[in-house]
Length: 190
Image (cartoon, rainbow, N blue to C red):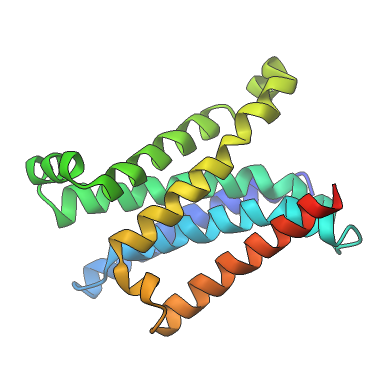
């Protein structure tokens, strides 16, 4: 169990390198979308932990899942950073990207979510967690704000997600509704 965080970090590093290497073979590989989807997936799995365990306290591997949650959150930031890098430096030219950032509220919302995830990642090291004490848990509740911002960013930057007509959007919306339902059950329980 102690090595689960290291395993998650190494797995994601290898996965990202594999995806980048594949992009040299397949030139039209949408790296921005792939890394954005991975960032969303890891943020979702991170946000799912507390309500899922509150609703189902006898969940198998509950301890491992809770222990791994910090690495899952860091993975979300890692893939969000790659998503932002490829969006800014590969899809848009840097000057156009900054102009677009200032004129697009949904891109700005995504950037704000990235900043929140950066702060949470920077404060997720064991030494810093011990120094912050109870304040660390309060600070890390910002992950819910980041989740809402990512949801607005994803649905508005990709309007097809909001329409619910593609299989990807159906999976996306179902996952979001499932998380909201679990959070609602968790609130009712407390």
